[in-house]
Image (cartoon, rainbow, N blue to C red; front, top):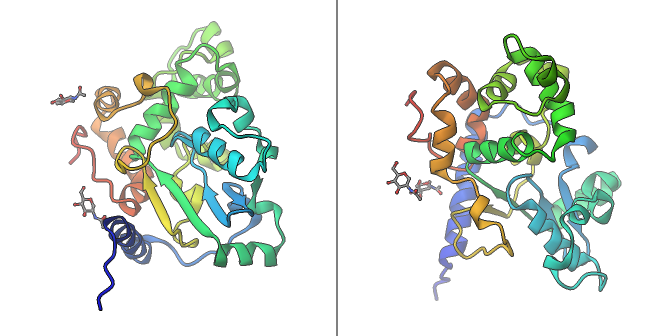
Length: 269
Ligand SMILES: *[C@@H]1O[C@H](CO)[C@@H](O)[C@H](O)[C@H]1NC(C)=O
Ligand SMILES: *[C@@H]1O[C@H](CO)[C@@H](O)[C@H](O)[C@H]1NC(C)=O
């Protein structure tokens, strides 16, 4: 009697196999996880789930779903949880908060999952969200002022002070500048998924793909503002081949690990 795997199981098995191969080929020697590496792993002890959250990959909605699952009656409808509350970290426990033996137990026994998205779509989405909206003053102050100071020629005093008109090109110069990461780790909104979730060390059972897995429906109401491939292409229009190449190199592991091909709009293919 033959066991027939469902198409979904086959898809996920293939994704895991590819990831393993890429890890073997490209990732440096196995590193031991520190608590800092586990900050993005959300724990659901009731259902035995570990979820690596990746900002800009429908993560607010997934956190809402997990809050309903773990809230034990506090929340019943994911859509009724305000976005700001879904982002309050104290509402969800991360694996970093557990002892070593508790961590190991959960890594061995829980269902581990994550959701990924085409790396440059995610990047443009982060740029649009953090730098082109008037209300994101915290990001303008924290990152915008720094980006303009270091990557704009003759900036105005106002731009230096407010940091609210960062161009996509300037954001790219900031990302590929080696000084940036020497100073501090990337913000989680543009940090690579491979660095947030450590998929070469943690063996995820399920890797969902935003925009590909049709069966995954997010309780989303913001379809119109979604960053699509075509929109992403527009943003890359202004980026020179030199910087396109540098940026691709920076995000290369995320392309390879999760089977995204180099975008056709790049001029470096
Ligand atoms: C990688 O993606 C291509 C299409 O872009 C697909 O045909 C192929 O099956 C995928 N490979 C894996 C291992 O998922
Ligand atoms: C995206 O661009 C391609 C070619 O540049 C075009 O054929 C396609 O219709 C566009 N899609 C959308 C949704 O605008």
